[in-house]
Image (cartoon, rainbow, N blue to C red; front, side):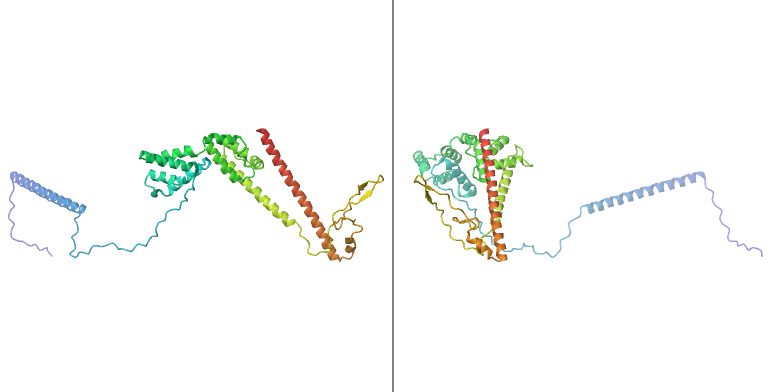
Amino acid sequence: MPEETTTGPPLPPKPERSDNDMDISISDQVLNLSRQVQGHEEIQKEILKTLRELKDQVRTPTDPPTPSFTFPPLRPATFPLPEQPPRTRPKAATPESFDGDRSKGRAFITSCLLYFSLRQSEFTSDQDQIKWVLSYMKSGRAALFAQRTMRAETLLNRPAYASFEAFLQTLEEEFTPEDEATHALVKLTSDEYFQGSKTVDTYIDEFRELVDEAGLFDPAAIVMYFRRGLNPAIQRQVSVSDTRPDNNDLQGWYNKAKRFYDSDRANAIFEAGNTRRNTPTTHARTYFAKPANPPPTTTTRPSPDGRHRPSAPAPTCDLCGNVGHSSKSCYVRHKIRGMSAEDRDDWVASLLAAADAAEAEARSASIFDESETVAQSEQDFTTRSE
């Protein structure tokens, strides 16, 4: 079939444009586009401004609105405090009455200072402390000093001492040993400070006090003085020990001397208890009723010249130990034959135990004598070396 074509009214012819019209239309389009761009830029600026304002509001938030209902203010809970016991002050011993003896002056001053340190609140001024010390100076030179001090205050109408330090200095000058350092050095050069029969603890305490008074600070010299006065036996044990302290280690010498002294005492107590334990007791069963030992009698025989001379002493029995007969004629000899085997064994065991006890006692006595001899020889050597 042939294709059908539709025909409508004819289209009007298109007008032809000149070059001038085309230039005007292009410029108008450019102008419109530029205006649109400017409008978009203005919109963008407004958007940025709005974003900045929102950002500032987020950084500095405003206070939240207060609720319409207000809560009452909170009050701290109050609980009754537990009752605390009354605070007691430490007890301090008051010094003893002082009579002015220089040998006791240092102890009296120390006791007063210790009381002041524990009861500071009881003394409001230096004059209170001075009066309190004077109240304990009741006899001897101390009483005269207190009277002289109070008389001076009455006459001058003012305190005799401006401060407690000045008063304390006067006390030390009046009531402590004169030239303590010289006396202490003289004592250290003699044998007055030697240990002797004193314990090591007592010797160390007195030695420390003496060193402080002498003002010695050289540890090597102090160690030599300490070794010189120490018991020779203990000094030798410390010197030859494997862990011997150095000559500059004063505290090491103190500790070693105490340790060896305690060890010797413990060993002596052990040996004494061991000797008593090994000593046989008297057997409960008595086999022989020994008669009382009569005193030895001597008889006199006439000599050819008519004079009387004493005879030889009477023999002593080896079985019963009595004097006046021998073992051959002893009554024990006849009773042994009538003893049973068990009694005879017990009797022999008691005799052997007594013999062992006598031997042990003799051995311990010889050891003691030997130790005494060694200690005496060491002491003599120390004395000769001085």
